[in-house]
Image (cartoon, rainbow, N blue to C red; front, side, top):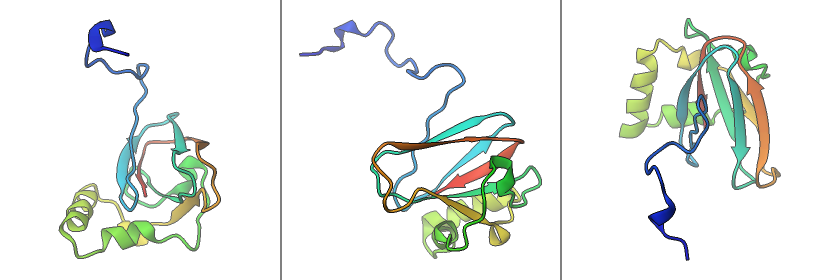
Length: 135
């Protein structure tokens, strides 16, 4: 039986300095500011999950090349989510437009597919400052 008596510093971050963790809920979006030389590691925790990514340069233009990604022609989940007539989608779209991101012209890249194994990972390195949306 484990108790909390062994905890010496409650509430401290368990990640090393300079490391952040974000969760993307199924059917949802997460936006993250990325800086030059940042390394992004994406883990497919459940397997069989597709991950779609939009990347915007410092001027708000779509730029997948910053993360060395290629456009996927069948990608459209991010736009589907953002252009729903639901309050949460409208709020997210409003916040992204405040960042001057050209959402309508955004190109997407898909990593992972329906056959992805549980725990499969991919690492991406940023060549420049950018804003990324993950779905």
